[in-house]
Image 1 (tube, rainbow, N blue to C red):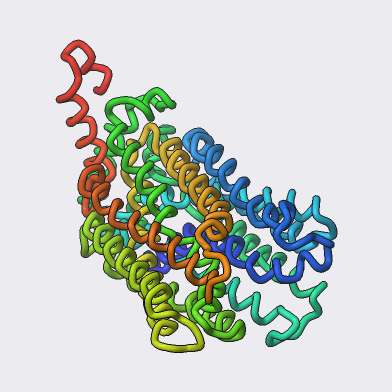
Image 2 (image 1 turned 120 degrees about the vertical axis):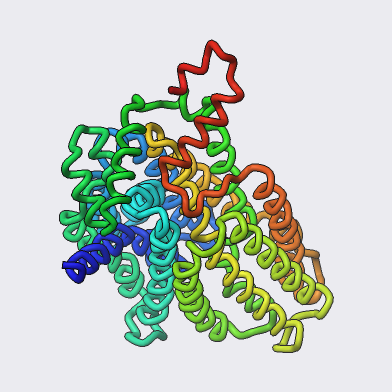
Length: 483
């Protein structure tokens, strides 16, 4: 019996987080596909059309993240996960076909809607299924899937390129790169059919026996299940909220935390480093072949480090992980920038290797801390009656910041690049990453002042703490509104 429960639990967590693999693959594969798309579709490098093929996913993600949360509060997490898998499948097939620019961009926007939906929905779903003492590790599975998807994307880019393992033609390889995402999308749909609904959603809809059965499936401790059911029923009696409650006194601490964490995760340079790592290696003096091969190594390294984070997530306070991560990321970026500016990185000298090591350390700190912890904390901190809406808000802000940083990086790079200087682009990258490094240390101040610790606390106790603090701050004649 215990063995069956164990297998069933693994199945639930795996397929519950599988959308993250699609999230990672679809955001990572475009870096390789773009080397060949322009040639076939006649798109000029550096043009608006060229940039919008990549940016279209981010715009779609903003839409998907905005819509999915409120819908999941009304329709349930499982049903929306199945709908997201169908959207993934549609967008992947359309992108793979991509016979002209319009079809490709529309398909990429559809794909982005699914990516944004997954980013808002899956952390909430996993948080509501997991026991309190395992919630951090289970929530980090989402980030592990994202990093695994990125790794598969890098391998796909290498193998399906003309000079890669399979040696496909330029006008064939990129179609397969984009279209292969349809396979995990189909797996997500069929696996999702067997997934349980969130017990919090079931209780809110009066399905108490089914909710208790799901909780018992995920947690063998009958006493804890009874206690959790009691707490969930108390919280579920509170009417569903909207934007008034999201921006109200009670949810404000979590709202500020979600806003800050979502923005800082992006402005500290995480996706810029992942997107532009090959360019950074080339600017540091290494060959293009080394840069592309190192991208795969970085992808694998991301997976390993995130897997370690799954193991340690519930052993270290969330705030400490964010703080240590920000320090490590900031120091790594400052070392990399210094190497490129002072040690004159180039031709494989000491400065070049300092850049490589610093960049690798930066990615390690991000993958083990800010990558997973941000999504875990946002997924578990909002009150039940606005949890879907709150997670949508955090995901929308994160994708908007991602879009802003990704779009401004090329322009800022031009602005910071000195004219007629040796390794001028490398110096421009170094100056730009000094800013990202400084923002890592600003994030430490934000963590200390505005984040709340959520490790080893049930979702209901987190919400009770928010209500208690809000109750203490409000005038006496308004306190009944929080009960």
